[in-house]
Structure formats: C-alpha cells, structure tokens
Length: 143
Image (cartoon, rainbow, N blue to C red):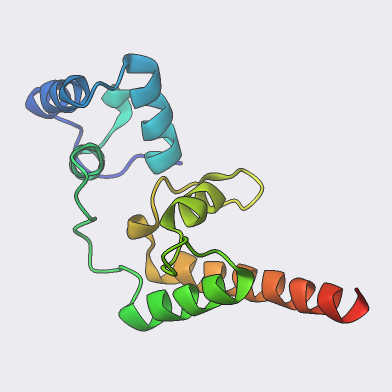
C-alpha cells in the first residue's frame, strides 16, 4: 500500500500515544488496532489523515469522511441480522457479533467497528449477509 499525503506530525504521534495510554491500551494492542484499521505497522508510517483517523478511533469517535454507509444500508444490514438471529436478548441488533464478524480474517473486512463501514464495504457486507441468509434458509428447508 503506497503512502500518499503528508507525513504524520510529531504532535500527532504524541497524541496517539497519550490517548492510547488514557484508554489503557498498551503498545502491542495499539499496533494491532492500527494494523487492522489502517494496514500500517508503525505510527511513523502514517499520513496526517491516517493519524486523525487513528486518533478518532481511539477516542471512540465515528469516522469523519463522507463515504459512510448510508442509513438505508445500515437498516438493510440490521434487517438481515434479524433474519440471521444476530439479535440481543432485548431484540436489538447485536453490534458485538457484527463487530466480531467484521474483525474476522475469514470475512475479510478488517474493520474494528461497524461504525467505520463505508458505502462500498457496506454493500459487500450486505451481499455476505444475504449469502449467509440463503444458506440458512436452504439448511432449514433440507433440515
């Protein structure tokens, strides 16, 4: 993955480590998170924009880009989750289960949180969930 954009600043690096420390995130976990989120193995490899994304992620903020998954996409995802039984005891979408799916290597999304879904990957997620729903329905018919 080629690096484009201006390099991370010293102040951003300090902020990344400070926020991680505040959140109780050790160096290994920070680097795992950065690798999953940005596909970078070192803080020094980041661009300014990637550093902002990492800081926002560590602070629990939603991404600031304009390519977020749409509300319609998220509603469709929630509907598919319901059909798959991915719901909490309270009848709400099980975001923890969705996040585990998005984090799994097998699924291939490499996202730490569903709130980071962009339009393209959201469409891919919808197709994956639809395929899972189809397999579930076929099993029920055959079962």
